[in-house]
Amino acid sequence: MHPTAFFGITTLRRIKIIALLLALLPTSLSQVTQASEDTMANFTKAPIDDKGLFTNVKGELSQGGLNVRVPFMLRRFGTYFRSGDGAPTLSKNDGAALRANALNKEKATVTWVGHATVLVQMHGVTFLTDPIWSDWPSPMAYIGPRRFVAPGIEIDNLPKIDFVVVSHNHYDHLDLPTLKSLAKRSADTKFFVPLGNAKLLNSQGVANVTEMDWGDTATYQGLTIHCLPTQHWSKRSISDTRKTLWSSWAVTGPEKRFYFAGDTGYFPGFKEIGEKLGPFDVAAMPIGAYEPNAMMKASHMDPAESVMASLDVKAAQVLAIHFGTFDLSDEPLAEPPVLFKEAAAKTALAGDKTWVFDVGETREF
Ligand SMILES: [Zn+2]
Image 1: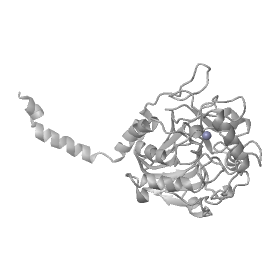
Image 2: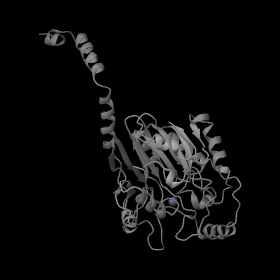
Image 3: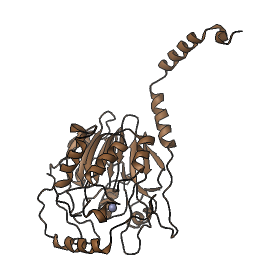
Image 4: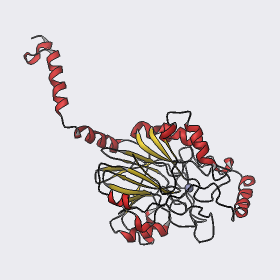
Protein backbone atom coordinates (compact mmCIF):
# COMPACT_ATOMS: atom_id res chain seq x y z
CA MET A 1 0.00 0.00 0.00
CA HIS A 2 1.25 3.43 -0.86
CA PRO A 3 2.00 5.37 2.36
CA THR A 4 -0.04 8.38 1.25
CA ALA A 5 -3.11 6.17 0.91
CA PHE A 6 -3.00 4.97 4.54
CA PHE A 7 -6.53 4.20 5.85
CA GLY A 8 -7.74 4.63 2.30
CA ILE A 9 -7.56 8.41 2.31
CA THR A 10 -4.95 10.71 0.85
CA THR A 11 -2.53 12.78 2.89
CA LEU A 12 -4.31 15.96 1.80
CA ARG A 13 -7.69 14.69 3.04
CA ARG A 14 -6.16 13.55 6.35
CA ILE A 15 -4.70 17.03 6.85
CA LYS A 16 -8.12 18.54 6.13
CA ILE A 17 -9.82 16.20 8.63
CA ILE A 18 -7.23 16.94 11.34
CA ALA A 19 -7.61 20.68 10.70
CA LEU A 20 -11.39 20.34 11.00
CA LEU A 21 -11.11 18.39 14.28
CA LEU A 22 -8.70 21.01 15.71
CA ALA A 23 -11.12 23.78 14.76
CA LEU A 24 -13.93 21.98 16.59
CA LEU A 25 -11.98 21.65 19.85
CA PRO A 26 -13.27 23.88 22.66
CA THR A 27 -11.39 27.18 22.82
CA SER A 28 -10.75 26.61 26.51
CA LEU A 29 -8.20 23.95 25.56
CA SER A 30 -5.72 26.63 24.49
CA GLN A 31 -6.23 28.37 27.84
CA VAL A 32 -5.56 25.15 29.70
CA THR A 33 -2.42 24.65 27.62
CA GLN A 34 -1.35 28.22 28.41
CA ALA A 35 -1.95 27.67 32.12
CA SER A 36 0.06 24.46 32.22
CA GLU A 37 2.85 26.08 30.19
CA ASP A 38 2.78 28.89 32.76
CA THR A 39 3.33 26.56 35.68
CA MET A 40 6.04 24.70 33.75
CA ALA A 41 8.11 27.84 33.03
CA ASN A 42 11.50 27.12 34.50
CA PHE A 43 13.45 29.78 36.39
CA THR A 44 16.70 29.29 38.30
CA LYS A 45 16.12 29.40 42.06
CA ALA A 46 17.48 32.39 43.97
CA PRO A 47 21.25 32.08 44.47
CA ILE A 48 22.70 31.77 47.99
CA ASP A 49 26.27 32.95 48.71
CA ASP A 50 28.96 31.21 50.79
CA LYS A 51 27.70 32.97 53.95
CA GLY A 52 24.27 31.39 53.43
CA LEU A 53 22.69 34.73 52.46
CA PHE A 54 20.45 35.33 49.47
CA THR A 55 22.26 37.12 46.67
CA ASN A 56 21.76 38.18 43.07
CA VAL A 57 22.74 36.35 39.90
CA LYS A 58 25.57 38.89 39.48
CA GLY A 59 26.54 38.61 43.19
CA GLU A 60 26.38 41.29 45.88
CA LEU A 61 25.31 44.70 44.60
CA SER A 62 27.30 47.91 44.90
CA GLN A 63 25.60 50.51 47.09
CA GLY A 64 28.28 53.11 46.32
CA GLY A 65 31.24 53.98 48.57
CA LEU A 66 31.04 55.86 51.88
CA ASN A 67 31.96 59.02 49.90
CA VAL A 68 28.53 58.69 48.23
CA ARG A 69 26.47 57.21 51.08
CA VAL A 70 27.44 59.58 53.90
CA PRO A 71 26.63 62.82 52.00
CA PHE A 72 23.38 61.16 50.84
CA MET A 73 22.33 60.41 54.44
CA LEU A 74 23.17 63.98 55.45
CA ARG A 75 21.10 65.35 52.56
CA ARG A 76 18.22 63.09 53.69
CA PHE A 77 18.19 64.82 57.09
CA GLY A 78 18.40 68.16 55.28
CA THR A 79 15.29 67.38 53.19
CA TYR A 80 13.18 66.40 56.21
CA PHE A 81 11.00 69.44 55.59
CA ARG A 82 11.20 69.25 51.78
CA SER A 83 7.97 70.46 50.16
CA GLY A 84 5.78 68.08 48.21
CA ASP A 85 5.88 70.24 45.07
CA GLY A 86 5.90 68.04 42.00
CA ALA A 87 4.32 65.04 43.72
CA PRO A 88 1.56 63.21 41.81
CA THR A 89 -2.02 64.50 42.01
CA LEU A 90 -4.39 62.72 44.38
CA SER A 91 -7.72 61.69 42.81
CA LYS A 92 -9.36 60.05 45.80
CA ASN A 93 -11.10 56.81 44.82
CA ASP A 94 -14.23 55.98 46.87
CA GLY A 95 -13.91 52.30 45.90
CA ALA A 96 -17.59 51.92 44.88
CA ALA A 97 -16.84 50.87 41.28
CA LEU A 98 -14.08 48.51 42.44
CA ARG A 99 -16.34 46.85 45.02
CA ALA A 100 -19.08 46.44 42.40
CA ASN A 101 -16.58 44.86 39.99
CA ALA A 102 -15.05 42.42 42.49
CA LEU A 103 -16.69 39.26 41.12
CA ASN A 104 -16.88 40.35 37.48
CA LYS A 105 -14.74 38.01 35.38
CA GLU A 106 -15.18 40.14 32.25
CA LYS A 107 -13.69 43.45 33.41
CA ALA A 108 -10.05 43.75 34.49
CA THR A 109 -8.95 46.91 36.29
CA VAL A 110 -5.76 48.40 37.69
CA THR A 111 -5.65 51.17 40.33
CA TRP A 112 -2.58 53.05 41.59
CA VAL A 113 -2.90 53.45 45.38
CA GLY A 114 0.54 55.12 45.56
CA HIS A 115 4.22 54.11 45.61
CA ALA A 116 4.39 50.36 44.69
CA THR A 117 0.85 49.67 45.89
CA VAL A 118 -1.36 48.60 42.99
CA LEU A 119 -4.84 47.09 43.21
CA VAL A 120 -5.63 44.68 40.37
CA GLN A 121 -8.89 42.97 39.47
CA MET A 122 -8.84 40.18 36.90
CA HIS A 123 -10.96 37.05 36.39
CA GLY A 124 -13.17 38.02 39.34
CA VAL A 125 -10.21 38.12 41.75
CA THR A 126 -8.86 41.24 43.54
CA PHE A 127 -5.25 41.50 44.70
CA LEU A 128 -2.80 44.10 46.00
CA THR A 129 0.93 44.53 45.41
CA ASP A 130 3.24 45.79 48.20
CA PRO A 131 0.41 47.46 50.15
CA ILE A 132 1.48 50.45 52.27
CA TRP A 133 -1.02 52.79 53.88
CA SER A 134 1.42 54.07 56.55
CA ASP A 135 2.70 57.64 56.54
CA TRP A 136 6.24 56.61 57.49
CA PRO A 137 7.92 53.59 55.86
CA SER A 138 10.17 52.99 58.86
CA PRO A 139 10.18 51.32 62.29
CA MET A 140 8.91 54.52 63.93
CA ALA A 141 6.60 57.39 62.97
CA TYR A 142 8.36 60.67 62.14
CA ILE A 143 11.56 58.76 61.39
CA GLY A 144 12.59 58.07 57.81
CA PRO A 145 11.11 59.21 54.51
CA ARG A 146 7.94 61.24 54.68
CA ARG A 147 4.77 60.47 52.66
CA PHE A 148 3.85 63.28 50.21
CA VAL A 149 0.55 61.92 48.88
CA ALA A 150 -2.15 60.11 50.88
CA PRO A 151 -3.17 56.63 49.66
CA GLY A 152 -5.58 56.82 46.70
CA ILE A 153 -8.28 54.82 48.50
CA GLU A 154 -9.06 54.18 52.18
CA ILE A 155 -8.50 50.61 53.40
CA ASP A 156 -12.13 50.49 54.56
CA ASN A 157 -13.30 51.30 51.02
CA LEU A 158 -11.36 48.48 49.35
CA PRO A 159 -13.16 45.53 47.81
CA LYS A 160 -12.52 42.21 49.55
CA ILE A 161 -8.84 41.43 48.96
CA ASP A 162 -8.31 37.83 47.81
CA PHE A 163 -4.54 37.95 48.01
CA VAL A 164 -1.51 40.17 48.47
CA VAL A 165 1.95 39.82 46.93
CA VAL A 166 4.96 41.37 48.70
CA SER A 167 8.24 41.95 46.83
CA HIS A 168 10.70 42.22 49.76
CA ASN A 169 11.09 43.42 53.33
CA HIS A 170 12.16 47.08 52.91
CA TYR A 171 9.81 49.26 54.95
CA ASP A 172 8.28 51.01 51.93
CA HIS A 173 7.22 47.62 50.48
CA LEU A 174 6.50 45.41 53.49
CA ASP A 175 4.37 47.57 55.78
CA LEU A 176 3.35 45.54 58.84
CA PRO A 177 0.54 47.88 60.02
CA THR A 178 -1.11 47.59 56.60
CA LEU A 179 -0.65 43.82 56.35
CA LYS A 180 -2.15 43.44 59.85
CA SER A 181 -5.14 45.61 58.87
CA LEU A 182 -5.74 43.56 55.74
CA ALA A 183 -5.50 40.27 57.65
CA LYS A 184 -7.90 41.60 60.28
CA ARG A 185 -10.33 42.82 57.63
CA SER A 186 -10.66 39.35 56.10
CA ALA A 187 -9.31 36.12 57.56
CA ASP A 188 -9.45 34.64 54.02
CA THR A 189 -6.90 37.04 52.52
CA LYS A 190 -3.78 35.16 51.41
CA PHE A 191 -0.26 36.63 51.52
CA PHE A 192 2.45 35.52 49.07
CA VAL A 193 6.00 36.47 50.04
CA PRO A 194 9.52 35.56 48.90
CA LEU A 195 11.46 32.98 51.00
CA GLY A 196 12.19 33.87 54.62
CA ASN A 197 9.51 36.54 55.06
CA ALA A 198 6.68 34.44 56.57
CA LYS A 199 8.16 34.49 60.08
CA LEU A 200 7.85 38.27 60.37
CA LEU A 201 4.22 38.26 59.20
CA ASN A 202 3.29 35.30 61.42
CA SER A 203 4.88 37.02 64.45
CA GLN A 204 2.42 39.88 63.94
CA GLY A 205 -0.60 37.60 63.74
CA VAL A 206 -0.80 37.61 59.93
CA ALA A 207 -1.72 34.04 58.93
CA ASN A 208 -2.31 32.49 55.49
CA VAL A 209 1.24 33.28 54.38
CA THR A 210 2.87 31.31 51.55
CA GLU A 211 6.64 31.62 51.02
CA MET A 212 7.95 31.15 47.49
CA ASP A 213 11.31 30.92 45.74
CA TRP A 214 11.95 32.33 42.26
CA GLY A 215 10.20 30.10 39.75
CA ASP A 216 7.64 28.78 42.26
CA THR A 217 3.96 29.08 41.34
CA ALA A 218 0.70 28.98 43.25
CA THR A 219 -2.85 28.91 41.94
CA TYR A 220 -5.87 30.90 43.09
CA GLN A 221 -9.33 30.58 41.53
CA GLY A 222 -8.13 30.12 37.94
CA LEU A 223 -5.11 32.43 38.27
CA THR A 224 -1.46 31.42 38.48
CA ILE A 225 0.80 33.43 40.80
CA HIS A 226 4.49 33.38 39.83
CA CYS A 227 7.35 34.38 42.14
CA LEU A 228 10.07 35.72 39.81
CA PRO A 229 13.62 37.11 39.97
CA THR A 230 14.64 40.73 40.56
CA GLN A 231 17.97 42.40 41.21
CA HIS A 232 17.69 43.86 44.69
CA TRP A 233 18.43 43.09 48.37
CA SER A 234 16.73 43.04 51.76
CA LYS A 235 17.24 44.61 55.19
CA ARG A 236 14.99 45.67 58.08
CA SER A 237 17.44 45.81 60.96
CA ILE A 238 21.19 46.04 61.52
CA SER A 239 21.67 42.26 61.54
CA ASP A 240 19.37 40.87 58.85
CA THR A 241 20.88 42.02 55.54
CA ARG A 242 19.97 39.59 52.70
CA LYS A 243 18.60 36.97 55.10
CA THR A 244 15.21 37.08 53.32
CA LEU A 245 14.55 36.95 49.59
CA TRP A 246 13.27 39.62 47.16
CA SER A 247 11.21 39.00 44.03
CA SER A 248 8.91 40.29 41.34
CA TRP A 249 5.51 38.70 40.67
CA ALA A 250 3.37 37.77 37.69
CA VAL A 251 -0.30 36.89 37.89
CA THR A 252 -1.60 35.12 34.80
CA GLY A 253 -5.11 34.01 33.98
CA PRO A 254 -7.28 32.79 31.13
CA GLU A 255 -7.90 36.31 29.81
CA LYS A 256 -5.28 38.65 31.27
CA ARG A 257 -1.63 38.66 32.30
CA PHE A 258 -0.17 41.15 34.80
CA TYR A 259 3.46 41.71 35.89
CA PHE A 260 4.67 43.57 39.00
CA ALA A 261 8.41 44.31 39.05
CA GLY A 262 8.57 45.27 42.75
CA ASP A 263 11.86 47.07 43.44
CA THR A 264 14.78 46.24 41.17
CA GLY A 265 17.77 47.33 39.14
CA TYR A 266 17.79 46.72 35.40
CA PHE A 267 19.03 43.15 34.79
CA PRO A 268 18.94 40.37 32.16
CA GLY A 269 16.18 38.56 34.09
CA PHE A 270 13.56 40.80 32.46
CA LYS A 271 14.27 39.28 29.02
CA GLU A 272 13.97 35.77 30.49
CA ILE A 273 10.63 36.66 32.14
CA GLY A 274 9.36 38.09 28.84
CA GLU A 275 10.43 35.01 26.88
CA LYS A 276 8.96 32.52 29.34
CA LEU A 277 5.80 34.29 30.56
CA GLY A 278 5.21 37.29 28.28
CA PRO A 279 3.48 39.07 26.76
CA PHE A 280 1.75 40.90 29.62
CA ASP A 281 -1.32 43.10 29.23
CA VAL A 282 0.01 45.46 31.92
CA ALA A 283 3.38 45.68 33.69
CA ALA A 284 3.74 47.84 36.81
CA MET A 285 7.31 49.17 36.70
CA PRO A 286 9.26 51.21 39.28
CA ILE A 287 10.58 54.45 37.76
CA GLY A 288 11.86 56.40 40.82
CA ALA A 289 14.63 56.44 43.47
CA TYR A 290 17.56 56.51 41.00
CA GLU A 291 19.71 59.40 42.38
CA PRO A 292 22.49 59.37 43.49
CA ASN A 293 23.17 57.05 40.61
CA ALA A 294 26.36 55.51 42.13
CA MET A 295 24.33 54.31 45.11
CA MET A 296 21.03 53.39 43.45
CA LYS A 297 21.88 52.01 40.02
CA ALA A 298 22.39 48.37 40.94
CA SER A 299 19.14 48.06 42.92
CA HIS A 300 16.80 50.64 41.28
CA MET A 301 16.00 51.53 37.67
CA ASP A 302 15.98 55.01 36.17
CA PRO A 303 13.03 55.83 33.88
CA ALA A 304 14.87 54.87 30.67
CA GLU A 305 15.81 51.49 32.17
CA SER A 306 12.18 50.96 33.23
CA VAL A 307 11.13 51.41 29.61
CA MET A 308 13.77 48.87 28.49
CA ALA A 309 12.55 46.44 31.18
CA SER A 310 8.94 46.90 30.03
CA LEU A 311 9.93 46.05 26.46
CA ASP A 312 11.96 43.06 27.72
CA VAL A 313 9.00 41.54 29.58
CA LYS A 314 6.81 42.24 26.50
CA ALA A 315 4.36 44.59 28.21
CA ALA A 316 1.52 45.87 26.02
CA GLN A 317 1.00 48.72 28.51
CA VAL A 318 3.18 49.92 31.37
CA LEU A 319 2.06 51.58 34.60
CA ALA A 320 4.67 53.79 36.29
CA ILE A 321 4.99 53.14 40.05
CA HIS A 322 7.50 53.75 42.88
CA PHE A 323 7.85 57.52 42.50
CA GLY A 324 6.49 60.72 43.99
CA THR A 325 4.93 59.13 47.09
CA PHE A 326 7.76 58.95 49.64
CA ASP A 327 10.84 61.12 50.00
CA LEU A 328 13.38 58.40 49.17
CA SER A 329 16.06 59.84 46.92
CA ASP A 330 17.72 62.90 45.36
CA GLU A 331 15.95 63.30 42.00
CA PRO A 332 13.31 66.08 41.82
CA LEU A 333 9.83 64.73 42.65
CA ALA A 334 8.33 65.60 39.27
CA GLU A 335 11.21 64.25 37.18
CA PRO A 336 10.63 60.46 36.92
CA PRO A 337 7.31 60.50 35.00
CA VAL A 338 8.59 63.17 32.58
CA LEU A 339 11.74 61.18 31.76
CA PHE A 340 9.70 57.98 31.62
CA LYS A 341 7.30 59.35 29.00
CA GLU A 342 10.20 60.81 27.01
CA ALA A 343 12.03 57.47 26.97
CA ALA A 344 8.86 55.52 26.09
CA ALA A 345 7.97 57.95 23.27
CA LYS A 346 10.81 56.53 21.17
CA THR A 347 9.57 52.94 21.52
CA ALA A 348 6.62 50.62 20.93
CA LEU A 349 5.25 51.83 24.30
CA ALA A 350 4.75 55.40 23.03
CA GLY A 351 1.64 57.46 23.73
CA ASP A 352 -1.34 55.85 25.43
CA LYS A 353 0.58 52.66 26.24
CA THR A 354 2.63 54.58 28.84
CA TRP A 355 0.45 54.96 31.92
CA VAL A 356 1.20 57.67 34.46
CA PHE A 357 -1.81 57.76 36.79
CA ASP A 358 -3.04 60.15 39.42
CA VAL A 359 -2.86 58.51 42.85
CA GLY A 360 -6.23 56.73 43.17
CA GLU A 361 -6.87 56.49 39.41
CA THR A 362 -8.34 53.28 37.94
CA ARG A 363 -8.14 52.09 34.36
CA GLU A 364 -9.55 49.00 32.64
CA PHE A 365 -7.19 46.69 30.81
ZN1 LIG B 1 13.79 48.06 48.28
